[in-house]
Image (cartoon, rainbow, N blue to C red; front, side, top):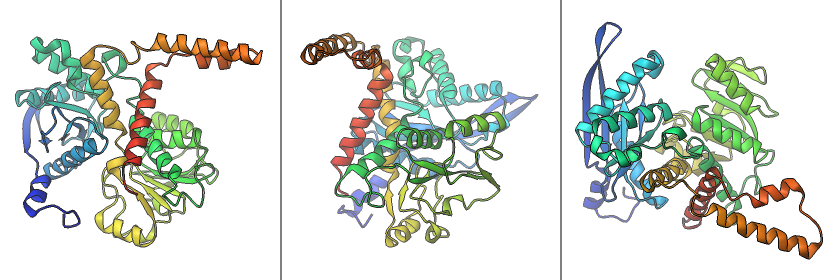
Length: 419
């Protein structure tokens, strides 16, 4: 950390995690006992509870978990969310297990975390990550409630990223992808930056997205549908799909759900087994999959003007130097993918207050907007068209408030940061 003005002892302390727990447990499945190993790391408890996702991945290890926990501390601090940093992982390939088996494994993992005080509304709050989603969070919450009957009133706040029916919040699933969109908007609208090919918008821009999970899908969807960008390539672990006129993202997602792969999509050309999708020419490259996607071995072949780090650590330190030397702008993961933890904070607050977002304000806003609409109609002598009037009078649903809050955080964070 020599590039920061910190004393040697302080920089060393910041890099260290306060604690990392390794848990090993067995689950009887398919007529035999299977053993599993998982980790939960706490980087800093300067703000409690600590916060961070739990990933299910066959290549997970303690070192990776500690690095991601440290990243969470910095990320929460950057966007001024009052959490310390934590991270967890279970060394497992979820594709190898049936739903009911995954539920039993997840519940056992939760029991081990609970024994060690590594889950709870006021101590440690997990969230989805690679290989997990709202289903796993619902299982974890239910198991925590069962194991802690005296804390049931706030038990829903023990995890975030839950289904709406289990105390989740509208917009959490899309949050990271929406945050990526807002991050790009903040960059393009800032007069201090170079923009994108002399432009301040994404209309017609060629975008390559690596990874078509939750983050990659929502990012590609929002940029193409809202901003007029062309998602020319979507890459996955088994190849990529390309269309120079832009892929139909929603149709591609439905194809992936139906077949288990993006390959074979009729709306584009498929390149099975090919990993050079991210090396094709584009305006914006968005690595939204795993770490180290851009490294010293391929950095000189990247043909993008702007690289947006939607995944955690997708550009290695060596590749970062190569890209910047070539004049490529990089928006860092620390900021770009913070949307998930911002909306997780909204969900956590909602669970603790037991008040849905907007409940205290919605009708007041509706009455205020009715007064404004009536005044405008009197002044102009014309009535609002029915569809415009209905939209204007809408008091603001939870999803609207969540998106508004997320956009405000992303824009204010960018404005407060040096370019």
